[in-house]
Image: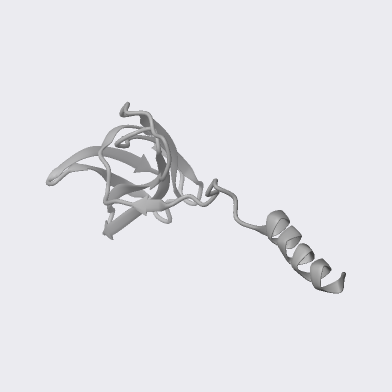
Length: 131
């Protein structure tokens, strides 16, 4: 009887703890920068106060999500790009426009220019006067 009990317990454990046919893990793929199609910025700002800009960008399909902004700074000129990621799974084939807030806190007064990446050498530019 003991010889029969051990294999039975082993099979029962495998059945309860074994792998399912569904894979719950999502493969996440980050691709390069994606085009920014529009940006809404406030008319002005004050030194030391956060300024929020609404950034609209496209992703390749319904599985695209916002991952991060990248920026390079040269004086008061900020060049900004959006980097999405894509999850594995059934995706819609539309090309959605997503929105994400970019927050900037100016440390000094002056005119700041923001260049938002659209394609190779094409940028959407917005300027803000900080007082």
